[in-house]
Structures are given as structure tokens and as C-alpha cells.
Amino acid sequence: MRQVFEQRPTATTRGLVDPAAARGGFALVRLDPAPDLADLVERHWVVRWDLPPGAEFTQVVIPHPNANVVAEVDGFAVHGIPGGLFSRTLRGSGAVLGTKLRPGALRVLLGAPDVLRPGLVAPAAAALSGTRGPTAHDVESAGRRAVDAARAGGDTAAVAAVTPVLRAAAAGRRTPRSALALDRVARVLGAVVAGELGPDAGVADLADLVGTTPRSLQRLFADWVGVSPKWVLQRHRVHLAADLVAADPGRPLAEVAAAVGYYDQAHLSADFARALGTPPAAYARRCAASRAALAAALDPAARPAPGAADLVAAGRA
Image 1: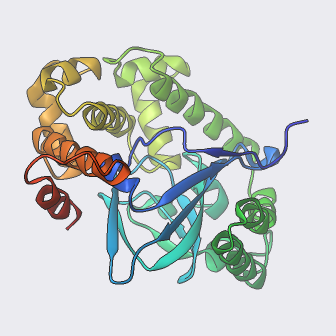
Image 2 (image 1 turned 180 degrees about the horizontal axis):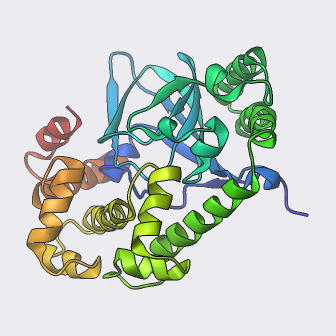
């Protein structure tokens, strides 16, 4: 029988800006949710870091259409989809436990569409507790125990600490309507991530997947996810493009654009710059510098290209 908590290494860096630099800043581990929460929880994650005195590392993330419930030393909070890029500066040593919710699950757990506003951050004790859920004290205690376990290296224990409060919150708030909505959203998102419809798929193609109209699909996403189907498609293409550039910074950008479904490089550059705040050519140079710096750190005989350290420092600022 498969264990409830199956620890495994990170399967993808999609969404991490400059993944080569990230390898020098922190370690990331992902864990499966309890089976009875799999409709609401995509996975749990633990970020752990140990930096030299006086050093700091800033990681930037291109958000997915997911909310997260995050337990850290400063508190236990629910984070909606960020309005823009998400960044966090790490110093000293520590660990964080996060729970990545499936698209639409935040609406289920919090119970109203107004919780989907961009950039929402709310105390988990207030958001998850209630007459049909766990008490605020239970939620706060779970967050503290999760952080303590993560800092001690007990990843599965950290997940075990938050699972009961998530289960209790979900038990009182799932409905047949929410189950149907999440199923349809999951079908659409799964098709996008798996590339079922090809790189040039549009909103109408996504609507056909669940037997509805583009307008109805737009309403579904507005009511349950907080972003539009078009946003999901564009963001997925930017994630793919960023992955391809990071893996091979020298790859021609016109080739990258075609591979992820853009008709030309100009449209890729516009969406890429809008999402990351930097054009793909500049991002390629940054990733090349970080890869060289990482190679030098792993192999003292390797030498980064001239100016690489300056580029990495500028990219982290």
C-alpha cells in the first residue's frame, strides 16, 4: 500500500525564476497530500535554507493559478494568487511548509468568490476556522508545530501537523456544486499542463473539453479560480518558455516561441516581459551567468564567463 506521505525530490523548476541560482539559495522538497484531500491539495512543499552570516538570497516566482497555505516562523497564512511576481528574501537559516491548493480549492475552503481577489493574504486561523471547521486555536497550533517539524528536518511530520485542520475545514465546506466546479477546472488545467490540445490551443478549445461555451468557461474561472482561461494559457506558455531558456540560454528565441505556441518572437517577448518584468533575451543572459556560477561552485576548476558574478548579483537585487 502506498504511504500517505510520499517524499520525493522536486520534479520540475517551472515557475522558479533563474533555477540555477535557486539551487545555491535553498532546497525544495515536495510531498503528496493525504488521499482524501487530493481534490483540494495538489501537494505540500518544504523550503529549507542555511545561508552564511550576512548573506541573503532573493527568489522570484512566476505564479501559477494556485493559492497556498504557508506556515513559517512569522505566522500561518493563506496566500491567494499574487497580483504580479512573488518574491521572498531569505537570510540566516530556516524552513517553511507550504500547501499548494488546486485551482478553485481556495474558494471551497473560504466559501465566497471575494476571497479570489489578487494578492490576498489572510491569517489561516481566521480563514480556515469556523462553526463547521477547526477552531482558530487548532489552526494556529498546527502552524507552529508544522514550522518546528520542518526546521528540525521532519517533513512528513510537518505535513501531518497541518493535515487535520485542512481536513476539518474541507469537511464542512465541500458541496456537490463545488465538486463539479473543481472537476471541470481540473480537467481544463490538466489538459493545458499536459499539452493535450497542442501549443496553439485557445479558450474555445478548452471550453470544448468540458462541453461548455467560452463565455461559460470564463464565468467558471472567474467564480472559482480568480483568473481567466486566457491568463492560464498565456501563463503556461511563459512558464514553458522560461524553462526552455533556463535549460539552454543559447537557444534561438524564435525557436522557443514556436515551441511554446507563439506565432512569432515578438508576441513571446511581450508576454514574457509582462510576466517577468524582463525580456527573454535579458533573462537568457542572466540564466547563462547563473549556470556558469553554479558550475564554478560545484567544480572549482570551472570558471564563469567574464562578468558573470556581476550579472548574478544584479539579477538577485
